Length: 157
Image (cartoon, rainbow, N blue to C red; front, top):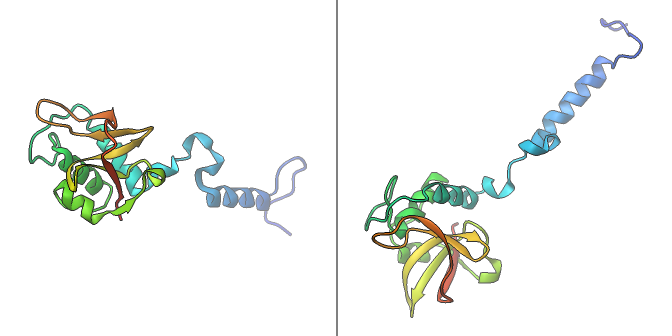
């Protein structure tokens, strides 16, 4: 006999325990508003959010945050906060990433701007043909439409 008396109309202890266990195993899936964006859980998604949080931070040559950035400083800082290590310059970052096609690009991938064979600028792909970057002296971190076809994409490993 159970230590808990059976009262008509009430759910048994075993049923409650099963329901709690199922909810625990399912995590936040039972609460749609609390379900995290899967993209944000990846290092690329985290780096994208960090870059976006720096909107308005002034450009400064050679700066890598937390309050001022040059282009590669922003990408390095953003990925560092996401748990990934990147080299300091745009060209070195390009050489460290897995090169991907424009069709396979995803939010959080790096966008490398080049002239001929030389990479001269880098930002973080924001989706919809846009990039978060720290453009040049006198400007601030911003999200802009990619303005040229002379770009290559890289995925941080």
